[in-house]
Image 1 (cartoon, rainbow, N blue to C red):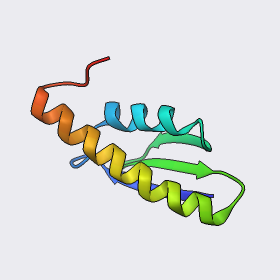
Image 2 (cartoon, rainbow, N blue to C red):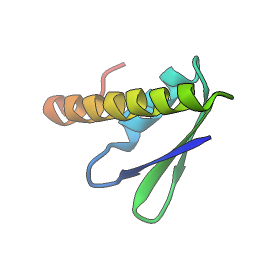
Image 3 (spheres, one colour):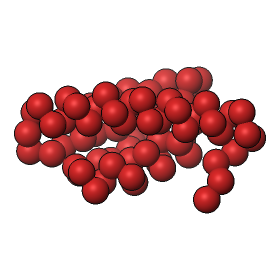
Image 4 (cartoon, one colour):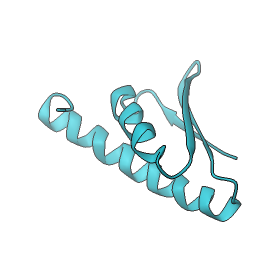
Length: 76
């Protein structure tokens, strides 16, 4: 399992939720909320796949957060 922490000031909860939902097709993913970070857990049963997905999830969540801030929200 891989755990990623995303700071509240840098990432949007909506963007992370959308990302986690999208990547559930490829691995078990969950988002939790901590005191200063959102935590995303990725479990695919293969360490290499989990590492690759971790990078993809981080990039996608960041891109969605930027899109959300530029447009004022995430559309459907």
